[in-house]
Amino acid sequence: MSSPPIRVSIVAPTFNEAHNVGELARRLGVVLDGMDWEVIFVDDNSPDGTAETVKALAAINPRVRCIRRVNRRGLSGACIEGILSSSAPIVAVMDADLQHDEAILPEMIGRIARGESDIVVGSRLVEGGSSEDGFTPARAFASNFAIRMAGLLVGSAVSDLTSGFFAIRRDLFEAMAPRLTTSGFKILLDVLATASPPLRASEVGYRFRSRLAGASKFDARAMSDFFGLLVHKATRGLVPPRFILFVLVGGSGVFVHLVALRFAMGFEHLSFGWSQGIATMVAMTWNFIVNNVLTYSDAKLRGWRALTGLLQFYAVCGIGAVANVGIAKWLFEMDNAWWLAAMAGILMGSVWNYAMSSLLVWRRAD
Ligand code: GDD
Ligand code: MN
Image (cartoon, rainbow, N blue to C red):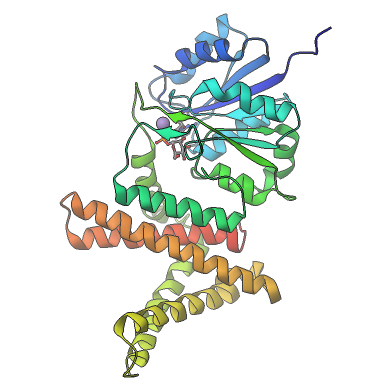
C-alpha cells in the first residue's frame, strides 16, 4: 500500500522568459516525477510573448498553467497571486530563468510534507550552496552585511534572506497574504517578518547558476525601481506622501547632524571620528523620534516597542548607509560624475531606509 502522491504547485514569475519556460517545465517533470505537481507561470504581459508560449505548452501538458497579468509589474505581487491561485497544500516559488537548481525541490517539498518545516529556503549561503556569478569583494561584503543585518531584524534562522527560491505550507501563506507588500523583490523577507507565530524555517544549499537566455531584470529593475518610484510616480502625483515626509525628516536630520557635530567638536579631547559618530547617533535618534510622531503617526510606537523600534531603525539606517556608499562607489567606478554617483547613493539609501522602516519598524504597507 502506498500513500497518495504529494500535491504541490510550483510558482514561477516571468518577465521575458519565453526561451526558458519550456525547459523549466521539462526539468520539473523529471525531478517531480511521482508527485502530483503543476507549474503556474505568472507573466506580466511580457513583450516577448512568454504568456503565449506558456499557453501553447499548457495545451499539450495539463500540468502547466498560466496567469497573464496586464498593466502590472512586480515580482512579489506576481508570486503572491500565483500562490493564491493554487489549491495544493504545498507551494514552491522559483525563478523561471533556470538559475535556481530544480534538483533540490524534492528535498524542500519533502521536509514540508513530513512536517519538519513550515518554510524551506533554497540557499546560496549554507553548505552545498554557492553562486556561479562572482561578486567583487566590496559587493559581496555589502550583500552579506545587508543579509546578516536583515537577519537580526527579523530574528530568523534563514541566511539567504533575498532568495527568490522557497517552498511553504499554503495554509500559512494564505493566512498572512493580506498583510504582504506586493511591490519589490523582497517577498521572502516580508513573509518571514510578517508570519506570527514565526515560521519554522530551514535551508537547502544549491548552486545559483548563471543565466543562459535573456537578461536579469534585477540590476536594471533595482535601479529603475528606485528612480522610477520617485520620477514616474511623482509625475502622476502618486508618490506616497509618507515617503516625501520621510525624506524631509531625513533632510532635517542632516541639519541636526551638522549642529551636533559642531557642538561635539567643541570638546578638545573628542577626535573628529568620535564627534562624527556621536553626531550620526544623534541624527538617527532625531529622525526616529520625528518619524514616529509625524511620518508614522498612525502606527506610533510606544513604550518598549519604541525602544526596540529605535534599535531596528539604527540597523536599517546602518544598512542604508552601506547601500548608499556601495552604489555611489560602484557608479563612480563606472566613470560617472561624482555628484551623480553621490546623488544616486543618497537616493538608494533613502529609498531603502523608507522601505525597510515601513516594512519592519512601523509595519506599514503604503
Ligand atoms: N511576473 C514578473 N514580474 N516576473 C518578474 C518580474 C516582474 O516584474 N521581474 C522579474 N521577474 C521574474 C524573472 O523573469 C525571473 O523568472 C525571476 O522573476 C527573477 O528575476 P531576475 O531578473 O532573473 O532576477 P535575478 O536573477 O537578477 O535575481 C535573483 O536573485 C535575487 C537575489 O538573490 C532572484 O532570485 C531574486 O528573486 C533575488 O532577490
Ligand atoms: Mn535570474
